[in-house]
Length: 441
Image 1 (cartoon, rainbow, N blue to C red):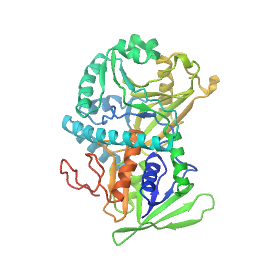
Image 2: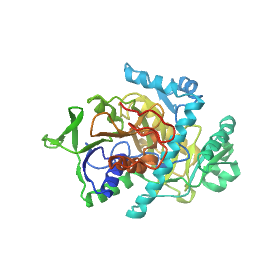
Image 3: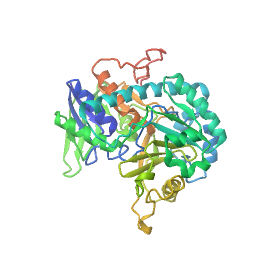
Image 4: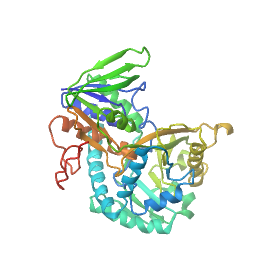
């Protein structure tokens, strides 16, 4: 089949790779000049199967209310005159209970495990290098009450087959000695040796190059103007070259929308309304000054809800989510406060290890923001829509890197008429185990 993929992030490129593996003809369209230039560009770098808890939990509503007036809050809800934001918020609140949390975790872990295996297969077959560190992920706590809750979270993950275990402060420091300077604040942690980290952008760019070598056509710097529907099925896609302004109508047997947060408005243009709302995430990348003191285990800071990963000679710290529409600016007071928080936190946890100075002070930090395509459950939409020939692979939130390879493989399997071997509620299909009604839009 001839398949057209809209979006060249980790989701779209992984989908392209697995479709090529199955003998399909592939064209990929993206408005950027290369792959992984938006949501996949500078994320937290973690493949975190064991740390995939949904944002929606029983404690979330009170926390969100408490954080509403903090510019540097881990999850910041900025009310707007946007009924879709409020609809998303109400659906999110409906998921804030223990039963929904466990149900959602089950699906996220299933997709994460499947995806991790798919990523390993791709790396074995391609030899792609992307600053990969297979040393696990450690989660450290500075609050006794939060650490007490960690035992339940670890036990839940163990129930789903993930070896996340609670560790004492001393054991945590043996796992990652770089945290010793911050040891007086740490009360304990959890650790999963099977998780890993690496640069999603570097991986995606390399995989896109290999897709091109296998015959995939990439139309970079092309805007998707509109989807065209006729008789209940997708009929074509209008795109426009940004440089020349020349429009082109693309035809395909199947069309996959993998445009991250921008998938929702694009799909609505043909009557497919999915609750995907942008969550503005932030990251900072610092040059390592003292390699011998820098961490080699990717970590999660529970207090400020950020992830820290080493990428060669640099350190990436990423986290916080701001629900504030499609704004991607870095010059607002809120954005500056969140970037400043990331730099200050690294200096607290790893003093003197990185060059965290601002540009005004002679430093060269790279701050970045991108829109995380979030669903109320944190479960992405992977599958077919009610428009014939139109598929969706979007809504991965903060787990696009963790779920990218598997989401692409599952999408390729579904398009090829196969059923992916995992217990997951694919969009437009019944769940194999729970018998959920087909989720069509």
